[in-house]
Length: 324
Image (cartoon, rainbow, N blue to C red; front, side, top):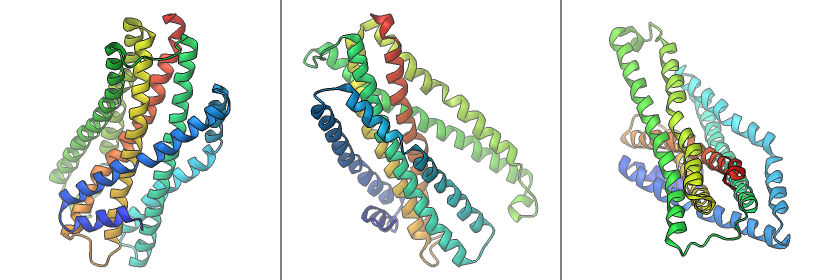
């Protein structure tokens, strides 16, 4: 919350929602660079010092998984304090209570971002292990990207994470539209809800969120599994290997971008809300717009790239015996 990017995004909010979004996206695009360089250095170093032994990468992958209990605890902390802060605000609690919970919420946002970054690192190493195993089982020594055939499928692999991200973000928008319509409909039918003298029908809203979340994830999941199967059976293992390289490389960059950008937008909003008499100002409204965009990035698109990475890798690995 005290970081330079968050402060810059908060300052940009005073000049409108557009500058809030532009500043946040600019910082988000920078965020994957250093982590990916460090991760690739670790992978190359471990693989080289182990005399090109795949088991060394497996050991690194196991090492990242050993902290899973801490990661789960840190990940749970964020939603707990977030909900506590929301409840305190809606119940008109004392300002000091709201401020303290708001600061805890910012800490929770940062912890969630760290856990998602850690999950992306672990997932990327897992993906490395999977497609190196794929190469070994398939008997592929190298992929010649100077040929148009392999290079074309490399670009196909790079495109897939963008397609998956587009689908899940679009699904979020469609579900949000239905939710907004339901809320407006309840307000129109029962104006006492706005006055606070009647309770809304929460079950309909929960049903909309749950039902659409399940239905909208069918297509992205099917693409993650069926596309590698189709490419493997139609074009062979070299083409599938190129798709795997492109998909994992692109996902390793997109995931941190989504996670870090969304968290920065959220913390920038919290920074503004901690200022006295800031709520409801144009600056606060711009920050809320940025946070609303950021939520779909860090809570939907970011995790989806991690799931996609593992799905496409496992699907490819499982069909190697059939392809051979």
